[in-house]
Each structure stands twice: as C-alpha cells, then as structure tokens.
Length: 390
Ligand SMILES: *Cc1c(COP(=O)(O)O)cnc(C)c1O
Image (cartoon, rainbow, N blue to C red; front, side, top):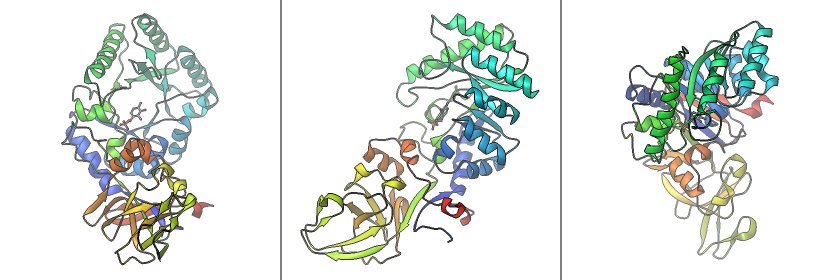
C-alpha cells in the first residue's frame, strides 16, 4: 500500500453504502436523504463520501460552512449543497454564483442575498432555518416572536431574486426527550401551515437528525438529515434496532518496536506507569496529534493478533506504548485502535465513552496527518494522503 505512514484510517465505502441502504429502507417511502457531510464528512472525507452516495441516488448534501460547500462544488457541479450555518457577506456572491443553497435566519441576511443575487444575475435558493427550541440559529417560534417571524418570512418571499426552497429546524434532545422533540416538531408544523395559508408553499421540508430518524417516522417529511447514522453509529440509542448500521472507519497502525523491560521500570513521559513484572512492550507510531486523546493515557486498549492489549504510560504526540506480554509480537504487525481484528472489536462507542465524548465528536479528532485509505468492493480504491500533496 502506498501510504507515507505506518498509521492510517481505513474507510469502508461498501459499509457506507450498506448504511445508506438501511436508512433508505427504513424511512418513509416518500422521504429522501439529505446527507450531512459537514466537517469533511465527520473527518472521513466528504468528497469520497459524496461520490459514493450520488451512485445511490442521494441528491442533496448538508455542510456546516460555506467554504466546505464551495470546495465540494468544484468536484460536484450538479448536486444540491446546503449550508446549514452562517454565511458571511463576503462569501455571498461566490456561493450564489456557484448555486449553493444558503440557510437564512434574519431578514438582513435575506436582503443581502437578494442584492448579491441581483448583481450575479441568478436567483438564490435558500432554506429558512426555524428555531423551535434549541436557541442556536433560526427565526424564533416563541410566542412573543412568532408574528414577527411570519412577517419576515413573507417579506423574504417577496424578494425578487430569492427562491425559498426549504424550511427546516434542528432538534435539541432527539436522543433523550421525545416530548420536547414533539413540541419542536409541532412548532415547525404550525409555521409551515401558517405560511401555506399566506400563500407561501415550500417544497423541501426537513427536520430529522440521526436520533430523530431512529425514533420517529412521522417526522420524515420530504428529506431527513442523517449524519452519524450514515457513518455507522446509533450512539447507543435504545430505539431503532432495525437500523443495523456499522461504523465505516477503522484506525490501524503497524508496530514500530518491541522490547522487554524488567519490573519497576517507568514508561513514557512522567514515568507514571510502572511495570509490575517483566513486561514486553510494543511501541505504536500514533499519538494525540492523530486523535488519540492524551487524557485516555493508560485507559485505551488496542487489538494485536486478535487480542486486547492495554496501552500503558502517557500517550505522546506521535507514539504510544502497549503491553504485549505473552504475545509473539513483531515489528510491522498490524494494530487496530478502532474497528475489528479477528473476533474482537474496539467500537467508537467504547472509545467515546472512555473519553467522556460522543462518537461524533471522537471521529472529528482524527487528524489530517493520518492517511485515509478508501476501500470499495473490498479493494483499495483510493488513498488520500496530505503528505503526498506537499
Ligand atoms: C450536524 C447536523 C445534522 C446531523 O446530525 P447527526 O446527529 O449527526 O445526525 C443534521 N442537521 C443539522 C442542522 C446539523 O447541524
């Protein structure tokens, strides 16, 4: 394999397709997937993920920032690209020109978009963001603000260079509080209906993130917005067992060094770990700069020869040590830090729990220095390696 490091992230596009098919099969038949590929596809590589999903009929993708959308547009001139967050004025002209769909949650923003669209000579497609209770972004559906919200959306609808294509909201507690989620959904539906009465019909309604997709068929509407679910984690949601997705990422490395040390030796910075008996230690060339949280020192386990081995001593920036006593381990043996080896598995849920995080946030630690190896039809299809680009 042509990678520049003996440590890499393997991304299984066959499993990604499997996950998408599972979601497609389980959601309502009239609903489609708006695939969330923000933050470079949860750090797994948005460009490759989009390529795979287009083949499965996915036609709309969600990004967090306008820069991500502009980047993806270079490779995919036709698909729908929706920026879910804020677009600063200095990016409006380019994004309208590139046919990028923008989220709008203030009247000022809509007017700016309208002006820039006029200059570019194109109609700008927008989705209205509604804040139904998360208090992040969106026109408020609070009792005291709702009339103002209707008026502003009506005014936006009257702007000549703008087309309101979508209306969306985001759930704050889809994984823990079904009653509040239902309240958010009701607020959303109330606005949708009122806008309809005022002659504003919006073709693209979407509200559900992964946990809502696992729990609520009534919220599927026109599109659903899976993020972590398509990458293969249900984040231990007890609902939605029929969504049998699996993680598409495996973190692997090769053993860099093996040695035996006597009892009472300290290991790594601070010498915080002391060997109790004679210990065989393998050094692994991967560290916190690659996404292994330093505060998980002495808590991680890795798989070598299908066995769980304890990581010992502080995790360094680029290396860490593992106790392999009793195993016949050699330099260049494969180490699995996330994923399966033989019958054992280190899951993203296990890692996230140890770190006090969620699977989504844990994935976003995996640094760009780790080459991404993409597997398709069980073969290496492509390698993304930033060192090769330098
Ligand atoms: C991130 C995000 C999603 C996807 O969230 P998951 O929990 O990963 O499914 C959907 N919608 C919006 C607006 C988001 O910001």
